Amino acid sequence: MNLASRLNGKTVAIKTYFGAVYCTRYIRPHYVRMLVDKIREVGGTPFVTDTTTLDLRGQRGSAVSYLETAAMHGFTSETLGAPIVIADGLYGSDQVSIEIDGKQLRHIYIAKAIYEADFLLSLVHFKGHGLTGIGGTCKNLSMGCASKLGKNFAHYYDLPKVEKEKCNGCGECMTICPAKAVKMVQETATIDEHLCFACRGCISVCRPKAITNKRATQADFNIRVADTVYGLTELIGKENMSCFNLIIDVDWMCDCEHLEDGWSDVPIVPDIGIAASDDPVAVDQASTDLVNQSQGIPGSKAEEAGALKPGVDKFQLINGVSPSVHLEALEKLGVGIRKYELAKIE
Image (cartoon, rainbow, N blue to C red; front, side, top):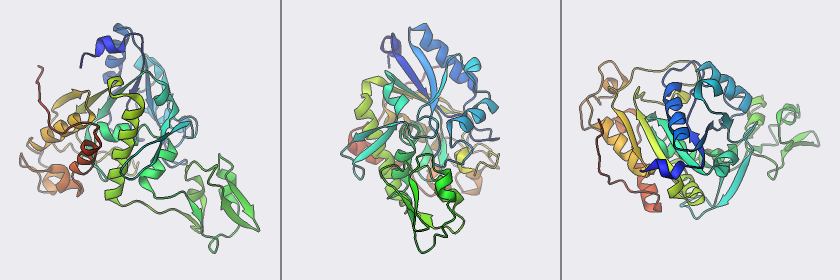
């Protein structure tokens, strides 16, 4: 990887995740601090970053609410030794639009602070995920680096739309919209697609459920995740990226998928260590293989799913989707390769 010489004189975005409210399976702040200190030692200028979630009213839906959550879990500029920057701005609309030739997407929307950094270093807690099988580097580089609009077009086929026959004209959607994209026309809400950045605030307050958009299938979501990583690597350059997967506290599901109800589950395997590579596909494939080769922990979701034995596809058995879906798509797009050599460092 030879990171030291590549980071000297660079502004380095450490893209990580601060955890959902009250959940416990997230990267501990001291791991991030150790990386911050190392970057400074070699002459880099680090900042720690993540993006807002898709839903404006969620616990991490704005920069303010997310920074409060981060502080709750011990992530502050003082503990990390570097500034925390919410990369897509106050509400998730700070972005750059990139044209790509993806399998499904023709545009992606990347958080502006990610785009402006000289170097992108992904530091992720490796775990399961209900839509992609795993939450690893590639998930971190796709949905984690996308603005709200970018997340929307991975999860949904279109922008929110008003079903006029259901609209009661209450106007609550207009009040909550930070983009002022909602107008009332003849006592019916309309959404200006040129202003909307898909924060879903309107959907969250619409009592008659008159505002909806069509959700992408799981298979299409995985392809769109791959498209987003492909566009990001083309934008930033593979030489300006590096990836670390912390294969510890391996929950079967991302804590954001525990419905932010404040719980995390028993890890499915014992702690394995840290996998690192400049290739995001290889590091996720290696991490997946290391988990699959491990004996599952009795009493965990692995036992419930019949995935205790070494060698079984634990994430397929537990979450119903294999990580190979998006990893194969990424390999076909030329982002990286699934074949790797594992060099063990004690």
